[in-house]
Length: 234
Image (cartoon, rainbow, N blue to C red):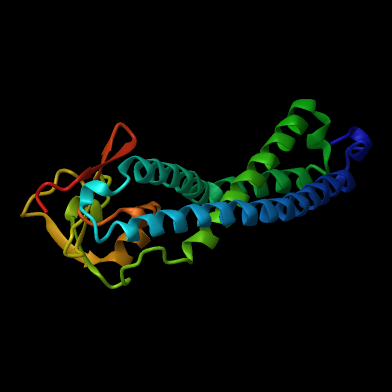
């Protein structure tokens, strides 16, 4: 932003700053929606290809499933969704700070922008807010879609550590009989729980990425990466 908006450093210049950021946000949002629509189309095509490949392998032995491709797709999807989820969690905080900055700006009648460092910080911060809001929009839009073939009310196994958020989900299993498990890796018979699939996904939205896990396989998280293996106990 050029100093043409700040020559007098008054309330009017402060309002100009706010209106300019709003205009930039609307333009960026429009571009993002168009790009996101195109990107989602590619991701959808990837999922459909993966689903088709998985369906074709249902009648075959589990060893015939392309584990390398599924592992890549799962980790890519997990990383993508995690980034959006973190933006969603941060959105209220960064918006709050942004509002406070503008309130201070109005209270000082724009004099706060006399300091060049404040102007630079303000400009960089609203770009951060814009980025997080766009990621949050993508997260909320995608969250409305149910990606699993299984019913939302499917009963799945988990443990109390996961439900109480004392431990992260480290192991996901999808048995040949259709049962699913979302476990902490520290699960025992004593802390075992049964909840609906919808409840797990609501509590851990990123786990929607597990919709591509084929029957007879387990996903184990090791060093921030999911490893897919055939379930030898199934």
